[in-house]
Image (cartoon, rainbow, N blue to C red; front, side, top):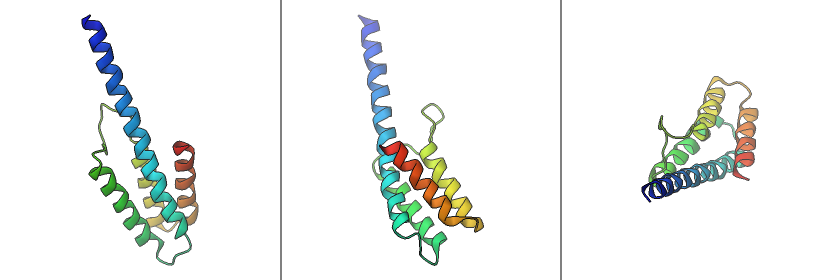
Length: 109
């Protein structure tokens, strides 16, 4: 009986983690879509920083984890960091945003 209870607890925890992970990708897709609408703006780095801040704020407000060594890889945060670093360096800004959005489209669907 105890094993069944523990198995159910682990199953529930795993289900919640997966749901949170999917929710994070859904939110990431929402904000990358905003970036795609503004991809032809003059000050792309400022817009990217602003949208990234909004994204992280929404994750925090919904209580979704931004980093945790025990849980799944937080690659939805990593793709945003990579995009910001690329745009900050002034290298292929539009392609970095398109790649971020394409990743989100693949993960979200």
